[in-house]
Structure formats: structure tokens, C-alpha cells
Image (cartoon, rainbow, N blue to C red; front, top):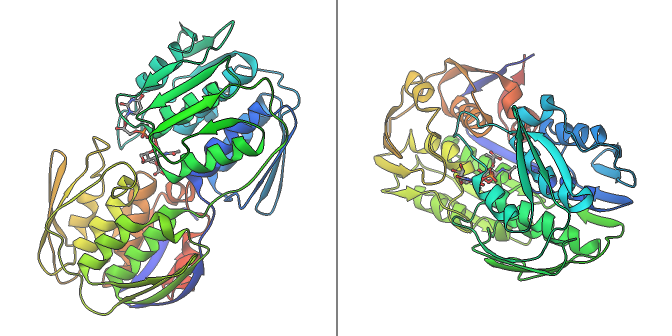
Length: 416
Ligand code: EPZ
């Protein structure tokens, strides 16, 4: 049951709804630690990383209940500030709990979250920013103890608009003494969703959606509520599936205002896209055209999380394309698998040179991480014949049910 089987080479046609955003839900769940009571989170995706985050919340004393896509967290009593290594080391996002736990209890002991195959994923920016707020750090073997008598608002500027570092500063600042001004903050939609949840609980945050956040520390938060926005990366994944296979699809429950960089790339390869407030209609009649150069960037630039799915489309484009991966140092993991399927791709440092082929051929391939795994599923949809993608567990970390979603769009796909 750990592999996905795809009978490829067919056009897509159909409609599917888009799940809630993994990268919004995770920091929002961490933020519930700041609320000394109930938080209600609707449209929360039922994915492995959310399950891990819920287990981490329960490990420190939170009561958590899920009713379909609604998660209710009662963080009235925090009984523990040492997080279990098991869940921390396998999920990078556990680092969000640092800012939240410090804001609530002023102490946390956590394992270093560790890197993954796409990069070392250090936390130096997180630690440097939190240290400016009065937080002290001590190493305890593989663990890191962070604590403070008082967390003080301050003026900070991030050397890079890190999503996670921005989220950790916000989480530590909402209950700090005084004001925090954060320059060069990340502007991803997931940061906006986090700030809106915190504001629903009484936090005072200005500049939301810009690169300068002003957070006025308050004494206490009250009950919080939010509806997790739809997942722009899942929506983009399925649009690239259509771009590679051809056909016409409809995606519903989409935040269509968050995908302009993706529309630009899809239009360049020849897709026709129309969208309303929360629905996208996409048509792809011909073989994809090549894209001379595309570079991943922080929001609103082309998202690094869609780089692998886009590479899969360009592998069958009618010409040569170049991708520069400017966010992570090792995010061309699927090149070798795509080459085994007949692609002509050369990765040199942060650049991938893709010479489009007429078609790919079904193979048994293995996912090594979340978005690369999703891209291999797309390659299976595009390829002639049967493709088996192993290590489905990586894909389940971020996609609630990629097989059902793609079946809704007309794909011949199943879990075995
Ligand atoms: C978030 O990761 C997302 N994860 C990632 O999505 C996404 O790819 C990334 O932002 C960029 O958009 C979640 O939101 C849970 P960063 P994060 O801090 O916060 C370096 C997915 O597939 N860096 O913006 O870890 C870092 O190594 C995942 O859903 C430092 O050097 O990303 C990377 O090269 C993958 N020091 C770059 O910055 C630091 O202290 C961007 O990292 C922090 C980051």
C-alpha cells in the first residue's frame, strides 16, 4: 500500500476541490499554544504533517479533537515544555513550536529539527532573531534549550525573507513586552493566514502581507478561530498535471489571487487559464512550449515548491528550458528519476537544463521527498505506459488524497 500506480499518456478532464493549505495549517496549529483556551481551525487538511503537529501539541498537554476538517485545540493547560524527539526530527515545521512555546511558557527544550534531502535547512536566522528578543539558548546534547525571564519587543531585520523565521518571530512577539518591528519579513500567503488567526485571538499585528510587520505585545490572548486558506501548491501541482497531459480541468475552492507567478509560467507553455474568485478553468490543447528561463523566488515569485512539478512539464516541452532553483540547495532530486523515464535533463549546481522530449516512458520510480514525489506522479500521468511511484508516504505528508483528486480529473491512478 506504499506505492501509487499510474496508467499514463492520457489527457485530463474533470473537476476537483482543493484542500486546505499544509503550510498555513502547521504554523496556525503551533500558534494555538499561545491561546490559554479553545482554538477552532476549519478546513484543516487531513495530512501526515498535521497529524504529527497534533501529536506534538498533545505531548505538551493540549487536548485536540478533529471533526472531519475542523480541528479544535484546548491549550488551557501546558504541562510540558520538552518536545518528543520522534516527531520533532521528522518534521521541520516543529521548529514553529519554539516561538509559540516561548511566548506562552518562556521555555522549551527541542531537538534540532534537522535537514532533509532538499537542503540542510539550518535555523540560524530563527535563533539570531529570537536572541535579539532576550531569549537565551543552551545546547543539551542533541537538544536545544531556549528560555527567557522576559521576552522583549525589539527592532529586527531578517538577512533573508525566511518563512519559518518570520513565523517564529511573530509567535514570540505577540505576547512579548513592547513592540516588535520585523523588517524583510516573508510575505507568503501562509504568513497572512497565521497573522489573521492570531488577530482573531486578540493579537495586535500591523503590516500584514507586507515585508515590514509591527507587532504590539499584549498580555493575553483569547479564543481563536480561522478557516485555513486553500493550498496554492496543491492547486499548482494539478495545473501542471494538466499542462503536461493536455486536457481541460476545473479546480474549486482555490485562492486564485495567490497564483499569478504560476499563471505566468502556464501561459508561457501554452495553457489557457480563466479564473473567478475561487475557481480556475484551465485548457491545454497542444504539447507544452519551452520556457527559456525560470527562477524560483520568495512570494510573490515562482514558488520553489512547484519547481519539480514544473520541471516534469518542461521535460516534454517542444524545446529547451532552464530552471534556476534559488531557494534550496538540493532540490533537483527527481532529475535522475525523470532521466530514467526518458527525459533529457542536466543539473549543474543551481541550474537545470531541460531538453524537452516527445514523451516519457513508464518506470518504477521512488519518491525521496514531498514535492518531488508529487512531480513523479505527474511524470507518470504524462508517460506512456504504467508508472509505479514508491514511498507514497512522502506525498501523503502534504497531499490529502492525490489519487482521488487526480481520478476526479480523469487520471487512471490507484494506490497499491
Ligand atoms: C517553508 O519552509 C515551507 N514549509 C517550505 O515548504 C517552502 O519550500 C519554504 O518555506 C520556502 O517557501 C512550511 O511552511 C512548513 P525558509 P521554511 O525558512 O520555513 C534557508 C513544502 O514542500 N534558511 O523560507 O523552512 C533555508 O535553508 C515545504 O511544503 C537558512 O539558511 O523555508 C532555505 O534554503 C518544503 N537559515 C531558505 O532559507 C534559517 O534560519 C528558505 O527557507 C532559515 C532558512
